[in-house]
Length: 394
Image (cartoon, rainbow, N blue to C red; front, top):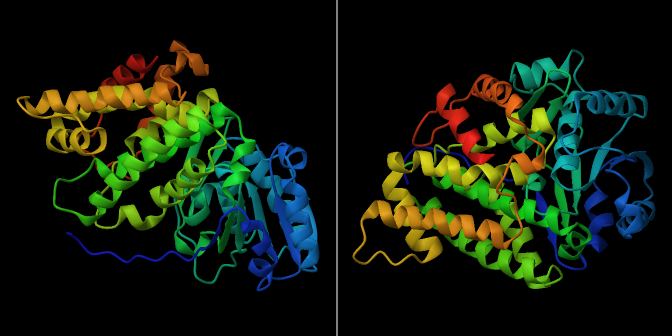
């Protein structure tokens, strides 16, 4: 392990098919006024809403609801949440949903306690949270696996008027204090949402794995996670109610973007910068954008990180390297990745996600402007290279 790091994860995780029963215990240390944040209302149809409300009411909490948080949560919705939180003296935010709901709740936890323009200060200017500023604690009830948002301090917000989609790594202070993780809750999402979450998980691991070539303990952990994501992803695609597969995927997703895999690593994140820019223009599903752009991107940078891509092929995909050139082994690994994307039902075409050729120049410009923290992968892309990868992804 090279470099110096501090690892801290403040999130208490309650995991299993009875995890929701721990909600009153999880909430006991927080104040009375709870802002319950959720999406389009599917939790009312699948019974999760009733589970959560029963847990909150048994804890004696006063619940204020904030529904309607969309995929790619917007600046307008964030401003609405700020007003609701301030008017109701919210003590704790409970995010019930997937990554978008939790991301939104983390952004709101900071923005509601800031006196100025939170969007400009934290997202556009990438300022850090002052120690003196109030941050509302966040808890999560996870209904979709993929983002890992339940144990990290990162939030992503979109301003469609520009358009721009910006992430902010707030750090451990903004990470959820607890996460209720019942794998059966993830049965409620569609096959497409499941596939998008599976690939989002895989992408999080790959983007940290494809950097550096030193003998790093973290890379061995990443390889184990990727092998399980591959196997459990295939099982879940065949039977979405395979509890063991879905529970593995939920736990994989948590550790894929928990700070653990970042220690001792520089990490890339170019694929996510591309995806955020595409999402700002098209509102396509984040995980599907990643699955459509991954192989073209990695094919392009493969020559610059050949040793690592060949290792990926051997260890994760069991590519037989005997008698083969290292580049052939590496490319066989990416072919295996492409086939697995098809196997789990994820997308391989941006055009099928609503991306059009006339969007590409804007997507390229937004990608470049988002690179305020330079990706640390094997090749820093320029304008022409980004556009060529996007065109190949169409």
